[in-house]
Image (cartoon, rainbow, N blue to C red):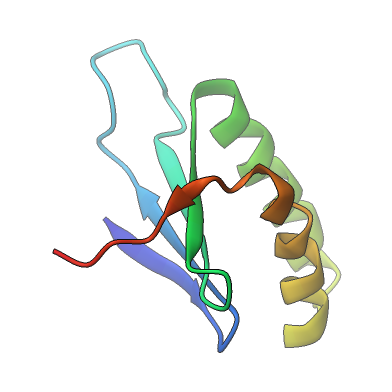
Length: 85
């Protein structure tokens, strides 16, 4: 587990050893919206697509606001409340 992005609005954590051999080769990503206190987990093909989209975005050297705007596209899918353990 590694935090790959952290701003006042969002946090993205990458899970690398996710799943069993041959499954979920991209691992998984948890995207948290700090203001809504909601999150989504992307695994499998969703994680692979997210990784590709992030790599393309990073190649353009985006500003922090552009990164947050990119992550805002996932807000509508976030239905799991963030809970601290």
